[in-house]
Image (cartoon, rainbow, N blue to C red; front, top):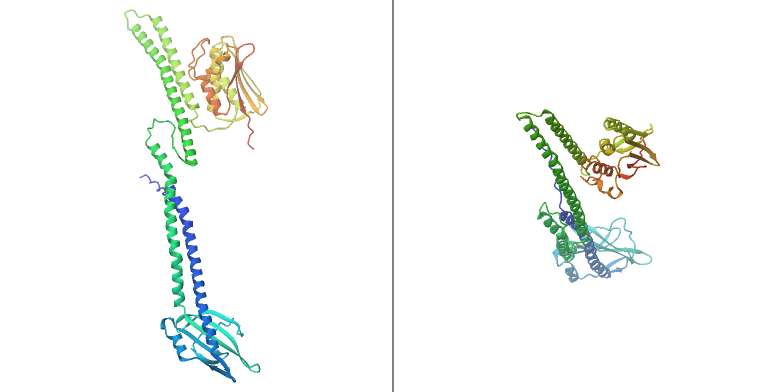
Length: 476
């Protein structure tokens, strides 16, 4: 049983990616703002509580007066009741003379931390725990006693942090809720902006989806941003290229069908004539043999035409091309040697003018063979008996020049661009047995090797077809 391929990971849409990359930083900023708001709320609440505790501690310190070697506390009961009347927000206090003299208040009052120096005039605020309750404590050191016997007095006032927490919560809500509302509003605006920004892409998708596969007209998207216009331009360029290729293939198929129809129809007619001749009462064997020779000629032309069509299809830009480093000199020698029997059969002198050194190029060996074979076929077909054909391969600077010369009738200058068109034939050429594809194949292969065919006159008469290839060096 064949193994099923693993499921492809689901790709996020462009809308979701934009939402993530726009809303995620916004969420991070909102959380950072919330943390900052909380820190500010705690600071402001502590400042309010600290101011209250500082005022209370100073007021309490004014009620403690030195008396002889001790202290006199003028703290009426009514004042104590005011401080202690709210059990949920009770104020604790203690007056002492460090290190151990307790004077007034709550003995369980937490002492200032050890790292805070006990010095007259210093005041401190710190958090502590008292009777299982978190409190905020204000500590004030005062100078008391006489110059001869100075004493240090500590006044401490503590208050539950519940009020501070409540104040912090209110401040945070007052700051956080507007921030949350602003975030939600911003998210909604971002979502609406992304939807509006992506609307040209949706219109473009609908235009493409509703198109017929045969419709290659340019796509028009009105009032689109620059990015969508660039994408539309690229799609239109692709459609234009596809349309050009489709039209070229249609024209090629039409021309090929027309070119094949004629020899096949003639082949059918000649076959019927031979059949009728052989089935007659008095068969004319010599005449039937001549008709069979014509059948053989038609079959050969049809085979040649089909081979040329296949070669042209291989040379099309759509066909895959795997180029490699090859010796153009060796390839030229092999193709020229293969063409010698055909040249001798027509009474032609075929020669090669080249050195023995390696001449490396980057190309496709099969296509380059087809290129040179077509050039030689044209020269052999149109050069009259007794003529000469020369294949040349020489270095010219950093290039290699491959040329095929013949002393045939040549091609007029005004027709040299036309002969590269498919199925075009020169009217004044003797023989006229070609199918008009040889030079088209040569030009297509040359383009795929980043060069072109140049036709020029051969002295004193004839044609010279030249190609220039970039010379490569052998890798070490």
